[in-house]
Image (cartoon, rainbow, N blue to C red; front, side):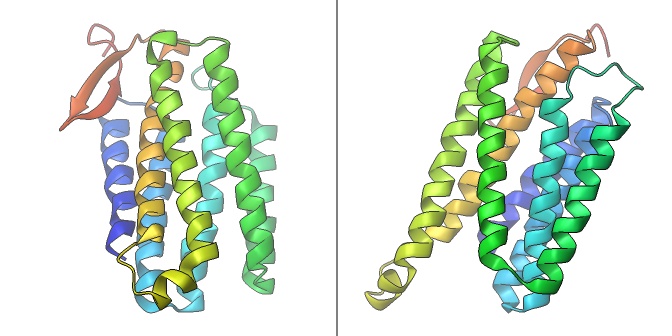
Length: 222
């Protein structure tokens, strides 16, 4: 339960910087959803109620789709966006959310989420290889590495959870899944901020918040 608040922390940190540096609605929505996932995850793991499980899983779906918009549409001019792409993502999110909420297809949801994660990884790899801002490519690689570690922890938890509980081993694989995922989401989003700022010709400056990377527009353009 406590590990879920790492998502809240990174979401709120990103949201604060989004407003501070006027990064746009796409980032505000994305970071807000990340924080909501953290709250939903904490409530689900604290109560184990099905309604709280939906509060955890449905925002996860919306968060990934919001990330898709950032990574697949970073070249759009300011004030202009692809309405068709937005509507397609929203329609998919609504339909998938309704199906999962009504039918409770947990396995189908998990497979869908894994596929979406893989799409996000491949998109990040593609953007890095174009290349877009190669000096910040390490943020994209860190995103991919941490997300892969987190995914491995999640799979291991699904497979070996009963064995770990049987032998009373002090291994919290699901908690590590939360940590690696939240960290990867934040680090990857900083690369997303960088390529968006570059597209808007605002320049980039990489700062830090207690060691965490914080991407901001060039001070001359603020």
